[in-house]
View 1 (cartoon, rainbow, N blue to C red):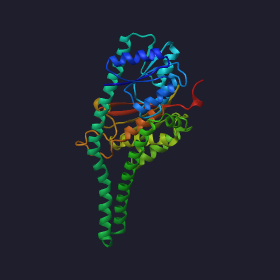
View 2 (cartoon, rainbow, N blue to C red):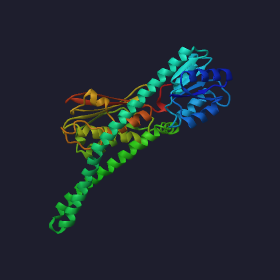
View 3 (tube, rainbow, N blue to C red):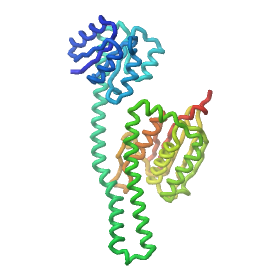
View 4 (cartoon, one colour):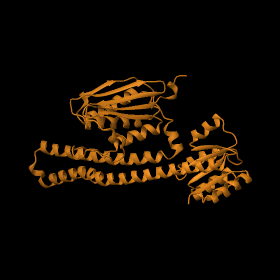
Length: 369
């Protein structure tokens, strides 16, 4: 039995809605104003909310804004009931995250149809989430133990080798072993940092205030940040000479460390999946609202199905290719870009080329006025 919360200040309308929905076998909760409605929503966590727009204490827009700012109520389907529904009203409600608008008076058929559509959509979303959780669990089970054990085994085995045979090694041999230990340690450190960063980004995405704060920071010299991050990461793969830059400078609505992380993961990905000696192009172009950043490599590419399944801990063709990494890099890029109000896309041709394009919002001081 689906649970519906009705928030309506007019008693007659509220009682009629409650009676109608109970006849249709819904579990109904009601509130006489917006403030009580918010309290009821947090207390009962309904499957759907019907809410009037014009109310005392807290209007419908305030109710929706409050509920969308909390993780436990952020995804509850929300339908506005309103006596007025001009274009500005619709836009305001939809911008806040409303799922539908019904103009009063509405017929019983209209109301029940709107509820049925939203509940069915929510059910499909939950099913898809459960599938994704199962896939995530399977991917973690397969990839995480390997990714943690591999560098850890390198550190332990090389350390034991030194301790057991220190007197037998020449200084150059000791230096080589220590360099291997350092490489394994850095790999393990980066893996842990990426896991923590991805979890943190997911949490930030559920908090409206944190997202707003994140988007308030700017980097004024995007070109320098991109060149520095790309060069340093390419050096780790001994691919610095493969980089080809064609950059336009701009102020970007993103902190320097966030932009740097995006570039690092993009270059790391390009280096892993293309052969040394092939070009890695780094291009940026200033548009009206966005800085378009494109990074292309001439690697083995990805299929459309693989692109559609990009997510945390997902790797492709592991049995065919030996590759390092947890599969988090592209997911971290996606999270950072979308949290800042940008977009991304991947274009790939098998065994020819992969291009990842990012639209990064320009800083407010450089937007055309």
